Length: 207
Image 1: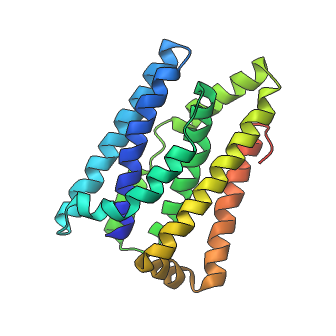
Image 2: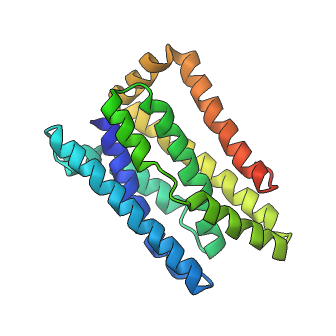
């Protein structure tokens, strides 16, 4: 319930954020593409809400414990430019997806399948990477700004995740039991960090 509640609010928040960020697009094509991504996120939220209802709880009740942490993350990392919004979609959402895929291995098969389904990329990474590469090609100096912003996103994401895990014993217990102990949790975090570094490297940027 907690895992699906956290993911559901994440998807609902992603819809709001992408719809807002789309308005900063320098081209109509970019605006349309990010708006389409927002629509996909809303569909994912609806899938998760339906599953929570099937499990006997209201989506609102399941999401409520995670509102403060996710809203804090988004308020502290609100993009001020189109490029920052694209980086957030690529880096922040990429790390979140990595986390949920890792933890989904510790739940039942049907829940795991649902999580993998709603985490489907839908072309987001390809779109973001294309926009970022084009920006760096036009303005090489933008690379340092992108890398700095990405590091801030990672730091805030880790901070808020720690708050959630400290407040929700069920999620921490799920991770500890699933990974085999605190060393396993550390290994999970290392894998997520490594995937983030790979994403940055693929753009020719420092993590």
